[in-house]
Length: 213
Length: 278
Image (tube, each protein chain N blue to C red):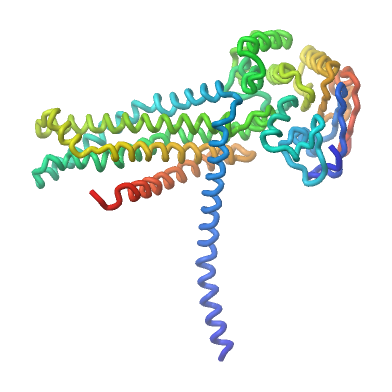
């Protein structure tokens, strides 16, 4: 994104390459979440250009913009899962909706990825029956299943225990090593201490600090 | 002197403007609202032809039919049998004056099939389903679930609105048929108890007056009502912005606007097809 302005952002420039992790840190209200929404084309900037996977996002039609979001996975801090679906269906939703593969193959892959994320016993449960970290892991499982080219993570370690934090780091590192461009936002300004160094274990990290950070 | 005339005239004008300005603003805001509803409906209809998530949309449509239609059968039937019975009862009192049995058939045709069936079914669906749809979608917006769907390249109009529109419209159509049937049955029970009218006579009286147009227009009304209810309820649900406190306000708007629009649509359709002809 170049020259992006939309309150509270002013003339923001950011470029993320494949296989790179960019950490945007800063206090609440500095527009970190807005940057993720801008990358997804969910918000239109007042000024500036956003290119996602080589395409100017606001020059695309509504349908093209929708298609452009498929290889971009968001793991949000709020509402990471749909409350009216089981955890299994939540993880499988984008694959099923976009008919990316056969139904039987979807089920096999969802089971496999849920086992990797230590969620295999939670498939039939509803999101409200899960802990915060389990919900976050399920959301990350869904993102990983889509094999995205861009991964957007919002405060991924908040409310997580050591084991789950390590699992998040391993999963994200695998995806980054596979060529995924990753943007991670965090309200923490002391990355190395608050997240027990997990952020620094991510490969090819670049830190961008916003407002007071 | 001229000044005095001018000031009196301007005073009169200002009184008029204080009356008409808010009225004009209200009128144009209503027009804008209707235009937004129309655009919302068109955006949903366009999604019918899209290939993505067909199986998911079909499954959600079935759930909506079950929730709006199957779950409401007992309520609709109960209300239909009571209302059908009451209408025939009141008509029998008039029948004593007119001594014309055909009058009963006319009442069933005019009151039950043409008006009561579609409108009562719509009222029940507004109370049971439309309000629930608005609450559900409103909460999804507040919980950022709609945003999540959009981030996955899933259009809320296709995933959330379309199945509800198809489900509510199909369900209300079926419920109206059930209402008409049960109301006529309720009417027969009362006629049988009150004047020992044989079933065959009752059937003859009703079927003589009932035309294909009556049934077709009743079907058209339910389809229009279904689309209105689904559009208003989903529009209001998705119009919630940030706070949970907006959800009850959106629900209130959904119920009131649906009721008003249905009554107006009913009047327009009735006037268009039947005019003043009896």
